[in-house]
Image (cartoon, rainbow, N blue to C red; front, side, top):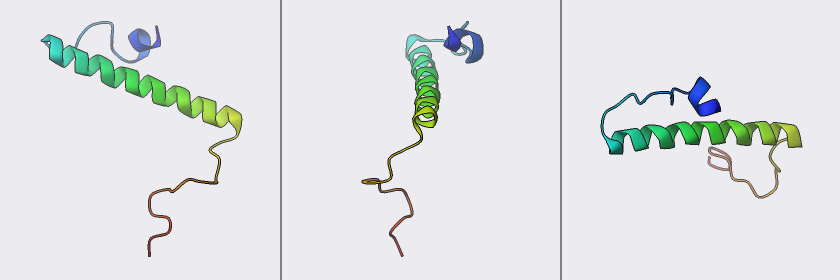
Length: 59
């Protein structure tokens, strides 16, 4: 429902099955990232131990 209403999956932007499949996969990736961000925000964020974030520890 969210993909159709807010992310352009009501109609395909491109012609061809392969291009439409890429469009659908990209939209699903975005929606899942938004859901993960909401879940992390609700749970208090990422656990700090065991993470190696880009740019940390390099000098």
